Length: 168
Ligand code: IDP
Ligand code: MG
Image 1 (cartoon, rainbow, N blue to C red):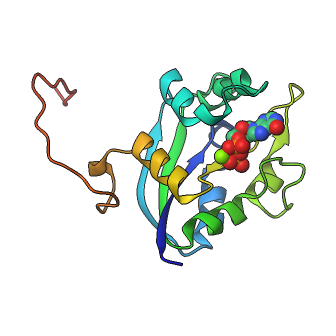
Image 2 (cartoon, helix red, strand yellow):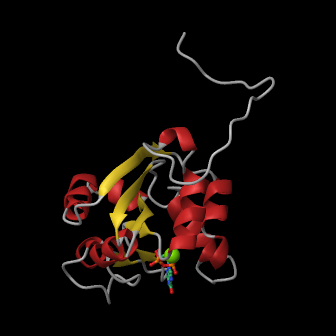
Protein backbone atom coordinates (compact mmCIF):
# COMPACT_ATOMS: atom_id res chain seq x y z
CA UNK A 1 0.00 0.00 0.00
CA UNK A 2 1.34 3.42 -0.94
CA UNK A 3 1.33 6.50 1.25
CA UNK A 4 -2.06 8.03 1.99
CA UNK A 5 -3.41 11.08 3.76
CA UNK A 6 -6.43 10.99 6.04
CA UNK A 7 -8.46 13.60 7.89
CA UNK A 8 -9.03 13.29 11.62
CA UNK A 9 -11.36 15.55 13.53
CA UNK A 10 -11.46 15.56 17.30
CA UNK A 11 -15.14 16.39 17.74
CA UNK A 12 -16.54 18.86 20.31
CA UNK A 13 -17.09 16.15 22.98
CA UNK A 14 -13.39 15.29 22.72
CA UNK A 15 -12.40 18.89 23.44
CA UNK A 16 -15.08 19.36 26.11
CA UNK A 17 -13.86 16.24 27.95
CA UNK A 18 -10.17 17.29 27.65
CA UNK A 19 -9.38 14.18 25.64
CA UNK A 20 -7.20 15.85 23.01
CA UNK A 21 -3.91 14.62 24.52
CA UNK A 22 -5.19 11.07 25.03
CA UNK A 23 -6.44 10.86 21.45
CA UNK A 24 -3.22 12.26 19.96
CA UNK A 25 -1.22 9.74 22.04
CA UNK A 26 -3.34 6.88 20.75
CA UNK A 27 -2.94 8.10 17.16
CA UNK A 28 0.84 8.39 17.60
CA UNK A 29 0.92 4.58 17.91
CA UNK A 30 0.36 4.52 14.13
CA UNK A 31 3.78 6.20 13.56
CA UNK A 32 2.09 8.30 10.87
CA UNK A 33 3.18 11.89 10.25
CA UNK A 34 0.98 14.87 11.15
CA UNK A 35 1.22 17.22 8.14
CA UNK A 36 -1.52 19.68 9.10
CA UNK A 37 -3.31 20.62 12.33
CA UNK A 38 -5.60 23.40 13.52
CA UNK A 39 -8.47 24.37 15.80
CA UNK A 40 -11.61 25.18 13.83
CA UNK A 41 -14.90 26.78 14.73
CA UNK A 42 -17.23 24.77 12.49
CA UNK A 43 -19.77 26.79 10.51
CA UNK A 44 -23.17 25.43 9.52
CA UNK A 45 -21.97 25.41 5.90
CA UNK A 46 -18.80 23.42 6.62
CA UNK A 47 -20.83 20.94 8.71
CA UNK A 48 -23.35 20.45 5.90
CA UNK A 49 -20.63 19.95 3.30
CA UNK A 50 -18.72 17.54 5.52
CA UNK A 51 -21.78 15.36 6.24
CA UNK A 52 -23.54 15.79 2.88
CA UNK A 53 -23.71 12.00 2.40
CA UNK A 54 -25.92 11.72 5.50
CA UNK A 55 -28.41 14.50 4.85
CA UNK A 56 -31.37 12.13 4.49
CA UNK A 57 -30.69 10.27 7.76
CA UNK A 58 -33.05 10.82 10.72
CA UNK A 59 -30.09 11.79 12.95
CA UNK A 60 -28.76 14.41 10.50
CA UNK A 61 -30.10 17.57 12.26
CA UNK A 62 -28.64 16.34 15.57
CA UNK A 63 -25.36 15.45 13.84
CA UNK A 64 -25.04 19.02 12.50
CA UNK A 65 -25.71 20.38 16.01
CA UNK A 66 -23.03 18.02 17.30
CA UNK A 67 -20.22 18.88 14.87
CA UNK A 68 -20.90 22.64 15.02
CA UNK A 69 -20.56 22.39 18.82
CA UNK A 70 -24.11 23.46 19.63
CA UNK A 71 -24.74 20.21 21.55
CA UNK A 72 -21.80 20.80 23.87
CA UNK A 73 -21.62 24.59 24.14
CA UNK A 74 -18.16 24.21 22.61
CA UNK A 75 -17.28 26.02 19.39
CA UNK A 76 -14.05 24.16 18.67
CA UNK A 77 -12.92 21.02 16.96
CA UNK A 78 -9.36 19.98 16.15
CA UNK A 79 -8.66 19.02 12.55
CA UNK A 80 -5.54 17.02 11.65
CA UNK A 81 -4.08 15.36 8.59
CA UNK A 82 -2.15 12.14 9.13
CA UNK A 83 0.09 10.88 6.35
CA UNK A 84 1.91 7.63 5.68
CA UNK A 85 1.59 3.99 4.72
CA UNK A 86 -1.95 2.67 5.00
CA UNK A 87 -2.96 5.81 6.93
CA UNK A 88 -6.72 5.46 6.42
CA UNK A 89 -7.02 1.93 7.78
CA UNK A 90 -4.56 2.56 10.63
CA UNK A 91 -6.48 5.59 11.87
CA UNK A 92 -9.88 3.89 11.46
CA UNK A 93 -8.56 0.92 13.46
CA UNK A 94 -7.54 3.06 16.44
CA UNK A 95 -10.75 5.13 16.15
CA UNK A 96 -13.01 2.07 16.36
CA UNK A 97 -16.47 1.30 14.97
CA UNK A 98 -18.98 4.11 14.30
CA UNK A 99 -21.33 2.86 17.04
CA UNK A 100 -19.39 3.35 20.31
CA UNK A 101 -21.26 0.46 21.95
CA UNK A 102 -20.02 -1.87 19.24
CA UNK A 103 -16.52 -0.40 19.06
CA UNK A 104 -13.57 -2.32 20.48
CA UNK A 105 -13.30 -1.12 24.11
CA UNK A 106 -9.64 -0.21 23.64
CA UNK A 107 -10.39 1.95 20.60
CA UNK A 108 -10.93 5.71 21.03
CA UNK A 109 -14.65 5.44 20.35
CA UNK A 110 -15.00 2.32 22.50
CA UNK A 111 -13.22 3.97 25.42
CA UNK A 112 -14.70 7.47 25.25
CA UNK A 113 -17.85 7.40 23.10
CA UNK A 114 -21.48 7.02 24.12
CA UNK A 115 -24.94 6.95 22.60
CA UNK A 116 -27.09 9.94 23.51
CA UNK A 117 -30.72 9.47 24.56
CA UNK A 118 -31.64 11.03 21.19
CA UNK A 119 -29.88 8.07 19.54
CA UNK A 120 -26.93 10.04 18.17
CA UNK A 121 -23.55 8.34 18.34
CA UNK A 122 -21.33 10.76 20.25
CA UNK A 123 -18.10 9.13 19.19
CA UNK A 124 -15.30 11.64 19.84
CA UNK A 125 -13.47 11.45 16.52
CA UNK A 126 -14.01 11.57 12.80
CA UNK A 127 -11.69 9.61 10.49
CA UNK A 128 -11.89 9.47 6.68
CA UNK A 129 -13.07 6.11 5.43
CA UNK A 130 -11.51 5.81 1.95
CA UNK A 131 -9.03 7.66 -0.30
CA UNK A 132 -11.60 9.66 -2.29
CA UNK A 133 -13.42 10.72 0.88
CA UNK A 134 -10.07 11.66 2.44
CA UNK A 135 -9.17 13.88 -0.53
CA UNK A 136 -12.58 15.57 -0.56
CA UNK A 137 -12.48 16.18 3.19
CA UNK A 138 -8.88 17.41 3.31
CA UNK A 139 -9.61 19.92 0.54
CA UNK A 140 -12.75 21.01 2.39
CA UNK A 141 -11.01 21.57 5.76
CA UNK A 142 -7.53 22.75 4.73
CA UNK A 143 -5.99 25.21 2.27
CA UNK A 144 -2.79 24.12 0.51
CA UNK A 145 -0.65 26.58 2.52
CA UNK A 146 -1.82 25.01 5.80
CA UNK A 147 -0.30 21.65 4.90
CA UNK A 148 3.40 20.85 5.09
CA UNK A 149 3.60 19.31 1.60
CA UNK A 150 1.80 19.56 -1.73
CA UNK A 151 -0.53 16.63 -1.20
CA UNK A 152 -2.64 17.36 -4.27
CA UNK A 153 -1.95 19.49 -7.36
CA UNK A 154 -2.10 23.23 -6.68
CA UNK A 155 -2.31 26.32 -8.85
CA UNK A 156 -1.24 29.91 -8.24
CA UNK A 157 -3.95 32.55 -8.15
CA UNK A 158 -4.03 36.25 -7.33
CA UNK A 159 -7.15 37.55 -5.67
CA UNK A 160 -8.48 41.04 -6.34
CA UNK A 161 -9.91 42.99 -3.39
CA UNK A 162 -9.07 40.10 -1.08
CA UNK A 163 -9.75 41.12 2.52
CA UNK A 164 -7.85 39.49 5.32
CA UNK A 165 -7.39 40.12 9.06
CA UNK A 166 -3.86 41.12 10.11
CA UNK A 167 -2.51 42.10 13.56
CA UNK A 168 -2.96 45.80 14.40
P1 IDP B 1 -18.02 7.27 10.53
O1 IDP B 1 -17.86 8.54 11.35
O2 IDP B 1 -17.63 6.03 11.31
O3 IDP B 1 -17.34 7.34 9.19
P2 IDP B 1 -20.55 7.86 9.20
O4 IDP B 1 -21.51 6.87 8.67
O5 IDP B 1 -19.74 8.66 8.23
O6 IDP B 1 -19.60 7.09 10.24
O7 IDP B 1 -21.38 8.84 10.14
C1 IDP B 1 -20.89 10.09 10.56
C2 IDP B 1 -21.25 10.30 12.02
O8 IDP B 1 -22.69 10.29 12.18
C3 IDP B 1 -20.78 9.19 12.96
O9 IDP B 1 -19.43 9.34 13.35
C4 IDP B 1 -21.74 9.33 14.13
O10 IDP B 1 -21.40 10.45 14.97
C5 IDP B 1 -23.06 9.65 13.41
N1 IDP B 1 -23.83 8.44 13.08
C6 IDP B 1 -23.60 7.59 12.04
N2 IDP B 1 -24.51 6.60 11.99
C7 IDP B 1 -25.35 6.82 13.02
C8 IDP B 1 -26.53 6.12 13.49
O11 IDP B 1 -26.97 5.10 12.94
N3 IDP B 1 -27.15 6.64 14.60
C9 IDP B 1 -26.69 7.77 15.22
N4 IDP B 1 -25.60 8.45 14.82
C10 IDP B 1 -24.93 8.00 13.73
MG1 MG C 1 -17.73 8.65 7.62
